[in-house]
Image (cartoon, helix red, strand yellow):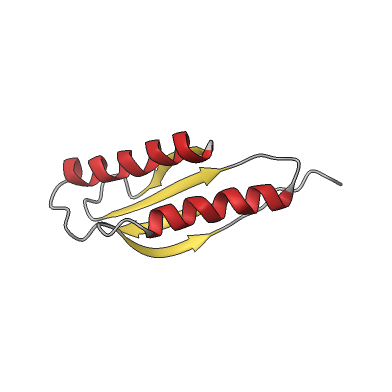
Length: 92
């Protein structure tokens, strides 16, 4: 899942990275997902976060990603611009 966010109150890369770091680390520890800033690293009010989860159950992955999405939405310092989910199914 990728989450495109704006950080409108950020006036420097340092300020943006503090918020991004909090979101990424909190999601890693709370939801046991892989997480990283994957886009817009050099823009001080924009970021793209990437999250990945692996499970033998599609329902479990959906539940985990739903929780991550709600967590990001719950932070008033960020505006969610867009969310995209991509799936890799190896059960063929």
